Figure 1 (cartoon, one colour):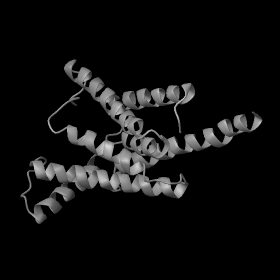
Figure 2: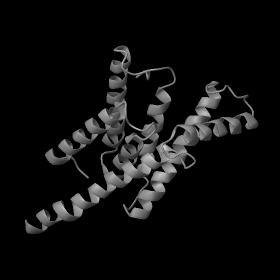
Figure 3: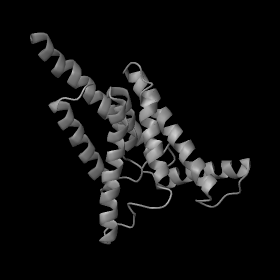
Length: 198
């Protein structure tokens, strides 16, 4: 997809809505669109630079909002903290992962969404273990497994879908379906008829 006025406006709106939604205090914990935006941008935007920049901008804007709310005492969640760069690196990596999607089909969107969630889960919790965060598990293979077990319990205990796979996985599937589904409808039913009439 190349950028024109309509697609630029659409992506700016997506970016702003996603940023405000992520910083919204009432949303289910972990249920956010940024990972799905990264996959979507990687799969759809032809200019690889923008495919990486847009999801990072969404994270940055929402982190700025979080920091503003934190400073005002309206949320306990800080916008900026040590080790945060890892989240940005992982989001950029998910955009690159999305670039591997050669064809946009329902099965590919499902597979890439689940794969992206699993990659993010494994790598983010690996860095928690490596950096001594969480419960500061020992730097052994068993300590790493304990760290992953801690993370699974976190997903189970703090998700709306308790005992299921956690808000992050469900959120990634939901937002990927929403983004790719809307893209499909727009290209098949709105943009294609306009091209055929020209």
